[in-house]
Length: 383
Image (cartoon, rainbow, N blue to C red; front, side, top):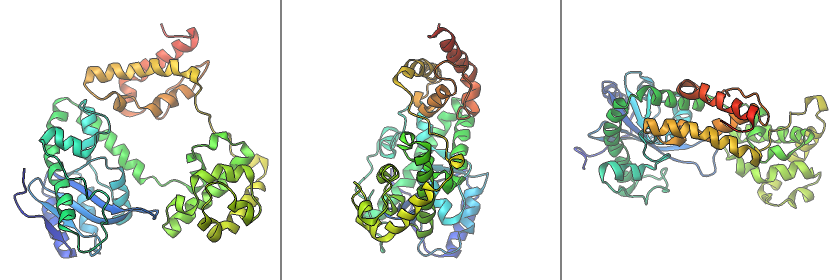
């Protein structure tokens, strides 16, 4: 498969406005981004690619200043935006122009809906559906350099060219299987989640080992993570460059009160001690001063091994539905949903449906999961 026309590079606002007007007349556009995010909090867009099925257009974000035409395209309800594994692309658009693509067709999700592998990589999907082997050597290249190399431009052009072709195969199959509404419901949820900005005061909940801490220690962790989140955004600096997550729990438990003690913590970067050491020590003191009535509640511990029997039986419900529908089982009933449900009543019940089980999944199997969990609770095992 080859392009019908050479890729077009768009450097000027007026040219972008012209093409966006053309794309608004189409039923779909394939969309991809190339970006750099090594030490910054926000992704830095290096290239935006739009494909119409015949040609690739490459927008240079280093020269465009008026993004309103692209915003209109991204938000147009009449043009389906096709992306693959789009969570990072959504961040790029949110930061670049404050808009998110909708309606959105994610080809990775679509492949899972059709019973292909869950979380299928783009290269493998293109290979499976089109018999084309994509070049991979530019995946980690510098997309902020100018001029971009011929290899970079070809790599970027191929992405949206083949993405459009993949969509034209997957969309009719999704439609024939009666799954379009479910897929668009899932992608709308992706967009809604991308639009939600975490409150810095809640950032401590994302720390993986926080469940090990006592409420008094969680108060310190909350103060540190609130500061880390705000500073990372303000400085546009990666969270772990500012203060590594691996140091947070030891920091909270040992509570160093000098730069020397701080520097001795394992995995504490010397740069952090130099730039923010005194501030971190003061933040620990602030956390220690939080009154007990304001301490955070303990974080839920990982589910015990004994819960695996219930999890396994609930998972079988999703697997049966997935097999009947020809879908990947991981997409029908996600691990986080199963765990959330078990937490509502383990070990003795009664169980309730968690908020995480929503939309078509709740309608499809909510009653069945609930009945099975409560049967497990009353008899010690499902019938």
